[in-house]
Length: 472
Image (cartoon, rainbow, N blue to C red; front, side, top):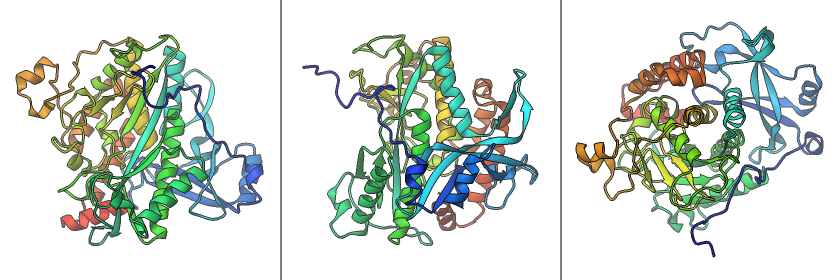
């Protein structure tokens, strides 16, 4: 018996995914919701009759027209660099088509942004790609990793959220303990909501491994299984849409806000990433593989910059603090260490070993967050970058150590402590400009700064919280 490997062994070549065919669904459905997510992580959609959707697909270049300003719009505020001029063609990706269990007769689909008028790319070829399209960016980075390093990744997201009975005076729907069955009391709204979420995920082909009650009032977690990066981000969008709609159906409001209750735990979107390559053979038991180590080194190099994308709101930094199991404020990693921004988990089980990126919350754009993290790791892979930091497995957490103790492990940098610091870090990170593109970073930072102003426009903290939980 192999006592080291534990958990289900997932590999890039043995994933089970569900593909839906439009011609087999059209008799049961009347509408298609064409979804996209803008740069401030707001889900948006257009609803079209299914007969017109089929006409679109049969056209020369299928798609719907979306104003370019829409990628940066915050409420009705247009950030600098987003004039009300120009349109994109948003092309549906039928591989993402799936039923929407919360809306009878409706299907959902994602797509990619394209330029309506082709242009000459840097290699001289004709292109319609849009540099601001997060799905296109993530796909490009994943393909680059496979082509340049023979590296592949599996990604699984945790969705933490809080069910509220009221948003005007923010109140949780119930109070329970961490992983307590009291969160699923028979006959309660919460039990009904969680069961409908679980049933809906399975009915629509969304990966589901687990549901449990979390530590904060009204807080729950839905765990998705490992998928390719693009599929994982796609499914997270549909999972969030399912969660908020099922909650609404039962008179509750689901929020992914980072930390509504400052006396309790916050909500994250912990992102599990495993690194795979046929170049390496069997991964070792007693240490990370060369690919895992180089990937981690790349992520750590850019860790001070990544939170501008993965922790994109002022409220994100109320969760990302020391001593609250959120990942802490020091740049480091640790085996099974939930006070580190990166937790190495299942360290001695090569078949299930992965990195939990704890510096991601539900206000972050899934595709953009993955593009930034995997892109940073890919820089490490391309250089086979040595890992300078030592493991921080405890018993002390980094914030409990003396400066000398931290220095002995190579822990010398802090995470950004607020969104302004995070933006400055990203703006000055030349490596990430190469990963994401200067245009995207410039436009993203403009939209993000506008978002900050919009979320903090109310003078009263209670009103700010209401705005936050209603926005996310």
